[in-house]
Every structure is written in structure tokens, then in C-alpha cells.
Length: 271
Image (tube, rainbow, N blue to C red; front, side, top):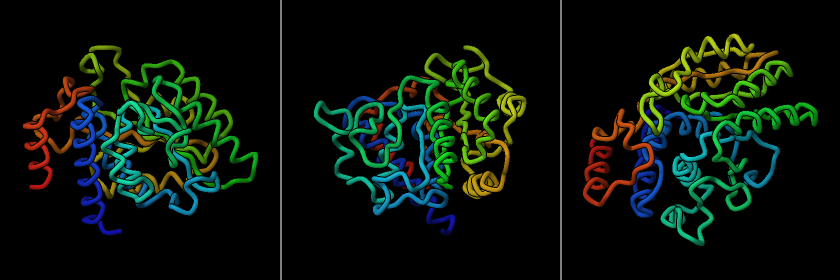
């Protein structure tokens, strides 16, 4: 797919993230916008998920370990045609399938129910090990947050994945430097994340998480690595694409009002 096409998909994903959160007046805006490029490339270039196999396990799978960014996952599934776009406007409504944190029992294409930070990498590694035992050659991907990497369970899972040589597992670490309480370096600084994953036995690739070619190349490289899992450490901007949201911890879990939504959508359209 041409880079310009990927950019258009990413723009649409960001627009829908903003619309659904504004409509619900609730949701996690900054992190969802920041990782939109990563998931756009993953779903449109790398994973073999489609309408025909979305209900099964004979395909690549994805775990949104940072489950609070569910608007991103729902928007990508809709852009991919796996979720009716009209359903996005039910986000966080009382009877909606689109909960604030993704539930695998309600939405086709959600491969793991997540939300309690730190658990997703362990679940993804379990899937990767199960695939190997079953002779299933499909890959498993997980998106982590850098703030989430303050959780000890992440490193237990990292150690286990290296021990079991889960080379069918790829973790993408969304490094935006911010979390709900402010800068990660001021909370419990997790850096250097690349060196930590290397020390735990992972193959590590550092990229610009908004450069679509770098994202694609890193994900393709991960497929070639044998004998160890891969961590793609992606430097991103929280709130990417909307000037007044970028690098602002206050937009971690804040919904835009009508005026802010209009301004944000106009900025995205002007890109």
C-alpha cells in the first residue's frame, strides 16, 4: 500500500477517535491519537486479519495491553471494515459492545479483554506459545505503553517470552513520555526501555512511531528474527495530530468539547 494511502487511513482513524470520545464525553484521547500510526500500519500492512477470518484463530492476533486506548482499536477495526462505523458512536454507552476497555466477548477482532495495565504482554506470550504448540505459524502482536512498563508483570512476561524463545511475538512499545500523572521520568522513569528489553533477551528495534516507512520496516524485520521475541520501541507524541493536545498529560483521559472537536478535526483535515 502506498504511504499516502496509509496516511489517509491514519487520518480517518484519528478523526473517528475524536468523534467517538467527544460523543461519549469520556475516553482516553492522547494515547489513542499517539499510537494511531502504529496500528494503522499493523492492520493494513502486516496482520492478515480480514472479514473472513476475524472470528477465528487461524490468523495473526493483536493484544491492546494499554486497554484504555480502546477508541484507537475500535477506530482501526472500523477503518479496516471489521466493525460498522456507525457503531463507534455507541462508545461507552450503557448497552454498547464498545466498552471503555475492550472486551473480547463482545467485539469480533478484539483478541483479549484488557484494561488492567501490565497484563497484556503475558497474555500475548501465552498466545504465542500456544501457537507454537499447535503448529500455528501466525504471529502475535501487543501494544504496550511506556508508563505501563512500570508494571512488574511486564518484565515477568518479557523474561518468560525470551526463555521460551517466542520469536512469533512482537511487542510494540508506545513511548510518548507521558502518563496520567505527568512525565514518566517524574513518576517512575522506565528508561532506557530499549536496553532493558535487550537485557531480557529480546531483539530490539528503535523507530520514530509516526514514520510509516520505519514502522513497516520494523514490523517486517521482526518477522525475520528467530529464537527470540522482538520489541519495537516507538517514539511517539501523545495527542499526535492535534496541536493543543500534543505532549499534554491533561489530555490522557479527557474528552474534547464541541468547540475543541471542531478545531481538532479541522487541523487533521488540513494535514
